[in-house]
Length: 133
Length: 133
DNA sequence: TCTTGAACCTGTAGTCACTACAGGGATTAA
DNA sequence: TTAATCCCTGTAGTGACTACAGGTTCAAGA
Ligand SMILES: [Zn+2]
Ligand SMILES: [Zn+2]
Ligand SMILES: [Zn+2]
Ligand SMILES: [Zn+2]
Picture 1: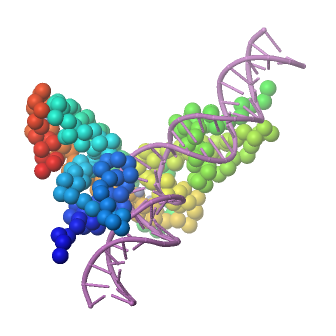
Picture 2 (picture 1 turned 90 degrees about the horizontal axis):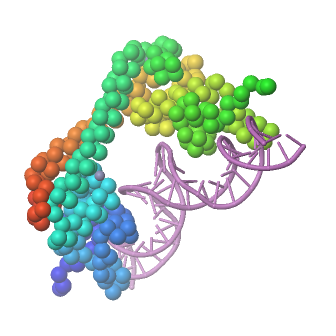
């Protein structure tokens, strides 16, 4: 009996990335096309799992797929500098902070609106009134 | 000389919503199709401007267009209750707070990563190392 | 009145990061 | 052998716009 082949389903299970998403990543060139079985099914290696996990971690940090592509390139490139990686990280950090600030502004406004309203059976609502001002 | 007609361009200017977006809102039925000039150009009324401003305020608070549609319906409906409006608002507030929490988690992780890296000319980077772990 | 140029029109396609089919083929365990 | 489960490709849908291309209308100046 031959050693178990790593199919796309197995890879999906161990990385937590859905099958469709893995195929999507392949289609856009984020991960390489793996070799196929005689029947045409994808067969993966340990390296693929590592690469995909890297992508997942980046995505969990909110990096765009374009960012991830760059980070993968930097990882591959032995001539890269620490500076480039750090720059990418801090740039993204700024983006995240901007988003937080935007959402906090929304939160404050929504909170004020919600508190202005009793929420009863009344047909007059100060929330709508303020939004329609 | 006749009174100035409110064209889509004028409406865009006073509401701060782009022409393409106004047409898009019309296409998806968020705002009504206005009457046209003989040549086929859209002519708006003050009510349209108010409705569009309402939409804009809702969008600035992060409501989805589907939420906005519901809010517009509630605004129109004289039988609505305060409760329905408040519920929509607090539900959305929860969504916003969840997003903030997610982004804060990212922010913390990114900050830790960034601080682990000196950012020099080195070709070894702890950021990549941790992401690739 | 004519002409110019800005503003407007429709329809389509692109963006991002997936997700969800439909309609088939491959693999594996009983 | 057969059934169940996996896998394949290709296409289209999501949300909320945005960007054209290729044409028409309008208003103001000469
Ligand atoms: Zn570094
Ligand atoms: Zn980024
Ligand atoms: Zn209310
Ligand atoms: Zn909402």
